[in-house]
Image 1: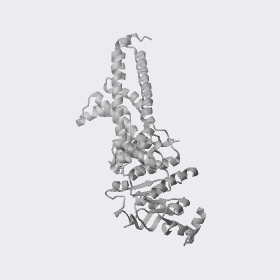
Image 2 (image 1 turned 45 degrees about the horizontal axis):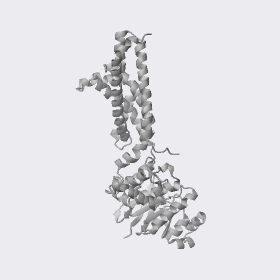
Image 3 (image 1 turned 90 degrees about the vertical axis):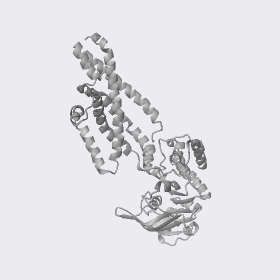
Image 4 (image 1 turned 135 degrees about the vertical axis):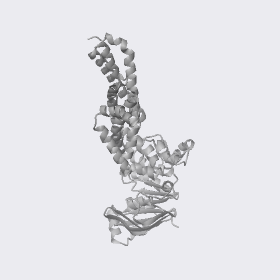
Length: 242
Length: 219
């Protein structure tokens, strides 16, 4: 059984059908990168996987459990699936430590005595142990995004989703975030990424999924996909992304 | 002009000022609670409740506060709810302050970006936890300046309670005036007292605000 099973998912916003029958499996430990033009439905698909959006038809299963907005243990489910956003979404009124430990404390994953150590541990994993007492506003974009990743890691998720996490960053800050993600990949974290970073997709991902017009247009290992795309749409996308 | 005849009434003036402060603080706290609850209801999904809150806001913001007080003090007893003057004034002023607070707090809640809520949900927090820990603190910060200026209006508005014979500052002034016939002097003195109280609260709120909202503003 795949960790994530997506079967014939359709999703419409108003009159626009964003997902037109998407099917996709992601195995445990796999790094899957979703690429495609804006409007191809990649972010929507990602948001459906943790029930931020509900699907109109078809189904998504994570660890065998069917995902939808009204699932009875939605909160427990989301504790197992971390998501990192383009805009970081750190809580501006909480220091870095509290940003990281808020959810573990409120959901009973940790207690006050151990929270500090948990924050130190996950911040060390993103290389920001020294920023534990900083306010989010005092950090650079790249640092904020790494704290956002640490905040997810503190929940020890089984699956991590990354929604264009480097798109809002200055070019010189992209590398530090990608490095953290690469380290997570090496440690065996299952990851689904929507990204425009072709270098990262090529070097770290096990599989590339090219979405086009609300469908999975083409997929395969990065080496094969980049070297010899089968569809003209992917070929032109690769050419334009260079 | 002669302020000397007022000197022997200093204890009454102090007591009146204390009653004014009590009335202000009680009404402000109750009104703010109404404000938070009303704002949540207005943003909520229960349509009849939204209408109810909307009706309450419009009613209390578009009628004279004095009449609201009269209704609480003179009319409610006919329906079995008989309140002493101070309590009636506190109820009327709480409702009055609450009606303004709802809109202020709601503007504060609306100022919090949707993605903050999503970030909280995605960490597995409950709706209440997201509201309490993620939405409310920055919302209150954004609402804080408007709440504090509304608070000063409330402080000055407590003078209405004199009309149902609550022993607050304005009522005490009327009493002293009737004894001394020193109208100008009496009202000049309580004006200074009101002014001093208002300015003190402003200073106090600045200190409280600086202590409560320590995180840096978004650049």
